[in-house]
Every structure is written in C-alpha cells, then in structure tokens.
Image (tube, rainbow over all chains, first blue to last red; front, side):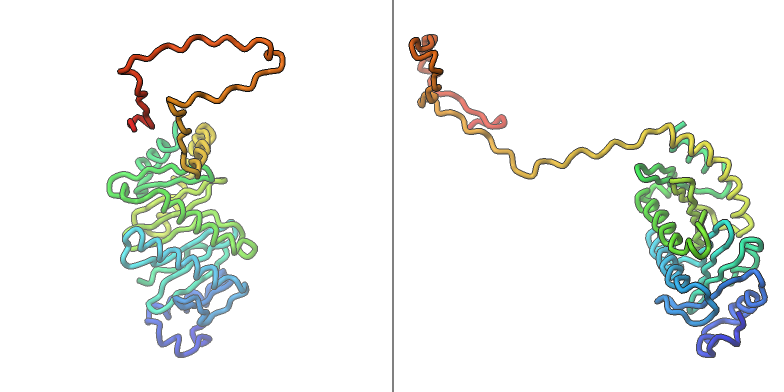
Length: 116
Length: 185
C-alpha cells in the first residue's frame, strides 16, 4: 500500500510508525490485499480484491473487542491473525482505525504488525 | 484418558499455555486452573465457534481457516480447529515466532485429543421438558356416597354377583382421613 494512495484526511490520522508499517506492506510482494477501515467497518482506503473482506474482518474485530471485554482486557484486541493453508489474514489496530492485510502464506509473519 | 485430562496435560507441558477449552457439537471440556476458573467455558466455546463462523465467510477467498490468534494486552487467545472440534487456548503474551513454535507443541496433543474424544461418549440428550399442565389430583370419592353401580353383563342378569358383607366401622374410624400430597385436608 502506498501511503500517497490514501486520502490525506486518513493519512493525518496515522502516526509516523503506522505510516512506516503501511509503507513496508506496500513493498511486500506477498501481500495480495489490504485496506484501512474504521471501527464501524467503513472502508477508508486500500486495494481489496474481495468485496466481503472488510465487512467480515470488521465483524471479526468486533468479536475480539467483545471477548476482550468479557475476559477483562481493558485495552481491547490489538491484533488478529488468521491462517489458512495458503494465506494469512491479519487485522491490526492502529490508533484511529484498523488495517487488514492478506498475505500469501509463504512469507507469513514478516512485518505484519508490531506497531504498539 | 479423558478429554479434560489431555487438556490439563497440554496446559502443563506446553510452555505459554495458561488454560484450554475444547468444544464439539455435543460437549464442552475445559481446563481452567487458578484465576481462569472465573471464566465460563460456555462463553469461551461460543467465542471460538463464532470466530470460525466469521472466518468461514471468507472461505472462497482465502480458504478454510485452521487457526486464528487474537492478541490482547495480557494474553493471546489461539482458536484452533481440530477436525470437528474447536480448541481455544489462552496464551501468555508472545511474539509471532513463539506462537509458531507453540503451534508445533500443540500439534503433539492433537492425536491424544482426538483419541479421547472418540473414547468419550457424547453427552446424553437433555430430559424432556416438564408437563406444561399442572397436575390435578383426582377427586376422592365421598365416603357416604356409594360407588355407582357397575353395569352388569347380560349373562349376569340371573344372578347378581355376591358381594362380601360390608364391615361395620367403629365410631372412631367413621371419619376417613384424607391426604393430598401428604397434607391432610
């Protein structure tokens, strides 16, 4: 994902570290789909090749938040990583929004998250 | 070995695993030691099922999800599918590389878990619901009122059946005590 492809209003909501992380994702050729979305599940930018991706991962993020509340994790759910035989879907909480990255399995786990 | 025992073994022998809940269509097994005993296994199982139900909506796009890890501040929660069962593990916070190693450790317990599940019969079906109508006691026959005469068969018309003489009740026993569910009335 190239940061310049995201609207400036959205970029303004990202911290420097988050912008760097998004830039790293942009040059990763294993990434097949990525998006930024709001807490309400509204897509804010990115390149998504499956229409259900953002609504579904938004539901998954909601599930994580509800479970965090249930088990007393006050800071909520930081990240979700789901693995299939061929791909890895990662949902990362940024300060003001969430990001989803779908990556081919070969390079799974490289630099998907760790902005805290 | 029971499913609970295998889950306990998994938690004790795998570094970083705090507690575990395993759910199938018919049963929920758990090992929730110490502070984790405050968790309701049903809630954890429901969460695991919901996580996979959600990810299955992307099945045609990324394939079937085998495991999902939720990272919180104090724990990570790994939800893993083992054939028809769903295993939920509470993990200590750890790096992604450690989670991968842990996944290999958990794999060692997949076979014993499946064997334990196969050995353990499914829970019996819940008992049928109670009758909706209230139970009504049958009215007792009045002591002074004779029972209605039983219609006789045609063959018995010539000779009425011999009835034994009614014993004379003593005055003290004349009033019959009546009980309904152990309470005299």
